[in-house]
Image 1 (cartoon, rainbow, N blue to C red):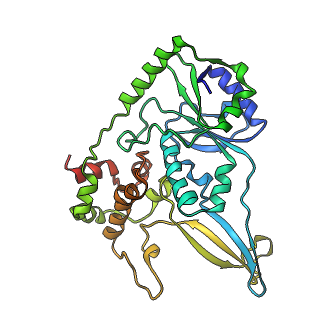
Image 2: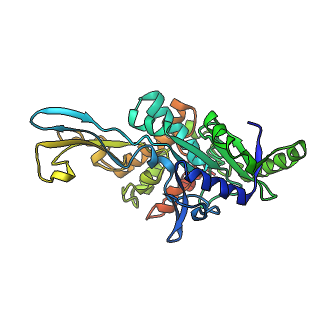
Image 3: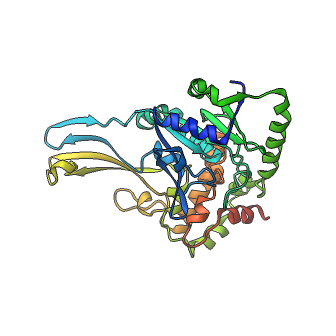
Length: 346
């Protein structure tokens, strides 16, 4: 699709049209923060949001979900079926789309997860490109501010106030076919404006934290000083993990009396998957009571090395997208940006 332009008001009119066809989730403001919520009208969207409190990860990998149910006495397992009705996530930021691309590698290519995949296939992603930095972000450093895939449509606000529309998939192109009257096709005269806008975005998101040699420093093992430093203050609460768009650890448990409509019936069981945190001691505890990572320092080391060494080695991208949510949510003020500077000696 040749890039097209749409005005701010026409964009809202288009969203109103989408709401009649899909369940649309978009950033809304509540109690001073932003979260994705299902909207009934375009006016509910907080178009001036910087980033949401939680990423879009939870739309695909649920914080808690039932994988299957069965009878304890008879068996008869029944697999759960995720909701596959078509929906739109409107306003996904580039860092979250980059994170979703990484998660696709894990749950689609590496280990095929039908629950994740069905939700992914039934979801249309409409991204809104950042033109200025969000609070606590360092996405330019982690090369996550300009995803080339993972979205169906990407919107970029020009200096003129118009919105540039770029399709990223066939679904994205189809989505606009019935609403072309709301848009105009870009012309040769628009090329300089587009180039100027993207040049400005590139300059805004230049890396501001050095990462040269970071993998080698980790391989040399000269990082223990940092884990020992943080061990004194880290609470192992897991908040950084749960808000992180690239943390996908989970736990699976069998529970009895699982049917809410028949509480107390111990013959009914269910297999539940829940988000988990590698910062929890229980996460590293196995039968017999052995704990693979008994100290806070060892768990922090594992967390950082996974993001900055393990994932890059396996998938070729950083395991952190620089959204800065962990910085905002940490109750004791641990800042991964400062960690990177200390590790590289900046």
